Length: 179
Image (tube, rainbow, N blue to C red):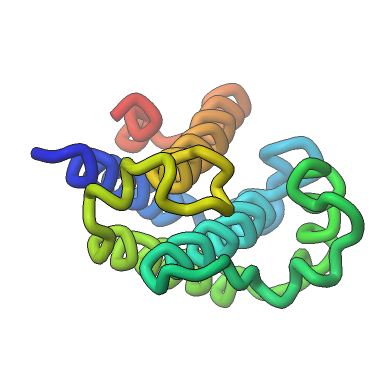
């Protein structure tokens, strides 16, 4: 399997782990339990979806050989929103916290599938060429896919650890973060 295949396979596995975890939780667990500081699992998925939209914009730009067109909500942020992730995360929380879980989950799932489909379209050589996209400042496009994987994995591990610590985890799904 080539590098692109490995990355996309890992992303697909990541998606399945999240879906398995979310399916094991009731809506009340997803929306009410404060599993990451003041955030519920729903808030974590919203956070992942928001940053996923930026990654999608970058992969779309690569496929169309143009500068990224970031999601409209990014224009509502001030200053260097990417460097000031805490401010961006707070804005995402404040803006999307009130949305229904079913909508948030659907948006995240559709976004994840879109991200995977776009990744499939990328020629591997473009994914690995660190000089191909000047807007990536010398980084290969693979960094975008790998960062999405790492971001989802980071939050999955934190959520699983919280659930294990607080006894809100069923034995049949305890191995999700270990896969």
